[in-house]
Length: 128
Image (cartoon, rainbow, N blue to C red; front, side, top):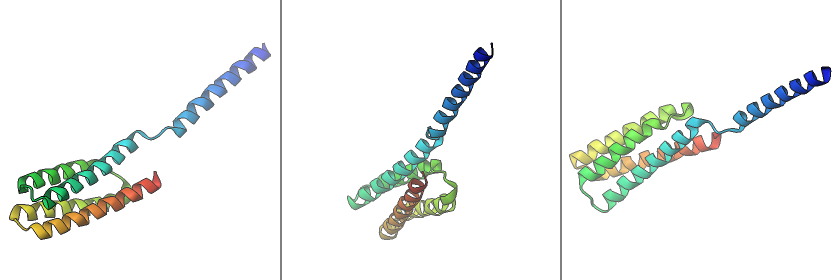
């Protein structure tokens, strides 16, 4: 009987170890979402700059900037949260400048926002 009890206890311990170790090594479910948001925000900003360089219609550029502003909301990482807010403000400023026809300042601000989001992604990637 003692032999049977020790085998059952060992089986329970082994099961617990396997269960804990698999969750410890599993990637956090939110990390994929945050990484995708960072990458997609950068892609949208680069797309807006590309459209601006090609001389696209302002409404197209503004739409892409608005898309970037929506996507960046999912880029939540405590260490870079304040920077994300600043870069979002730059996107807003760039959008408003495009709408006013101030192309050069808008493009410069958009490039600053792009650099900021790339920096934030690098910080996030370093920690994850």
